[in-house]
Length: 247
Image (tube, rainbow, N blue to C red):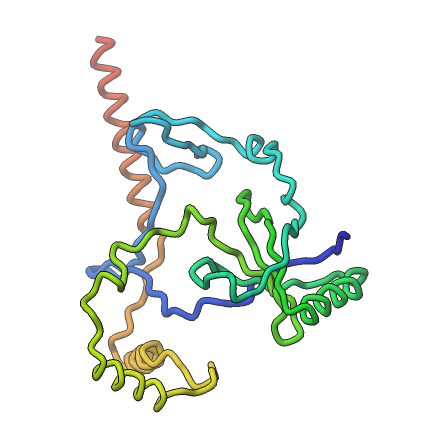
């Protein structure tokens, strides 16, 4: 059965992001991709994708190479099994997406979701996103079908040390720990939790924005002028050297 659907992220990042600025003049720091041999800033069409096969030796992989790979899941979600969700270790979970059906896919997708709910299982399979095939899991959550990207087994790192390697547990201390768990036992309500550090940081930023500590970010044009002047100087020096050799 084929059901036409679309995917969109189920989460968004809420971290506070900072820009780096030059302490002396307030200009925003720029990151540029440069060639150390030609001493120049590279345009996107001058950059290739390379995989290092040995020290200093690279195999170039083009977009055409990636497009030609025989990936059956490139435009589909391939369901391979139905499992109990508790059988999947949360360590495998990576990133969630909402599955959005097209107009013609609404009814069959609703049927699929209903079957998952009745059987109390989730669908395990594979999907290809951004030229990378990955494991995935489809589950029903709040009347919405969610696709969870999963890590491959070889992406899960083994722990350095297990808890069984620790000293024997003291029974009295265990009773105290159990009492603490009983005291704080509750149903999970995500609305009770918030990022207090982020809130405090935003309050600090808002407070400083009302004072004289706000820095005006300088226009990037001066940087371009400096780069142009350096290029002109190099050109002049090259002409001088060429004239000296021709005499």
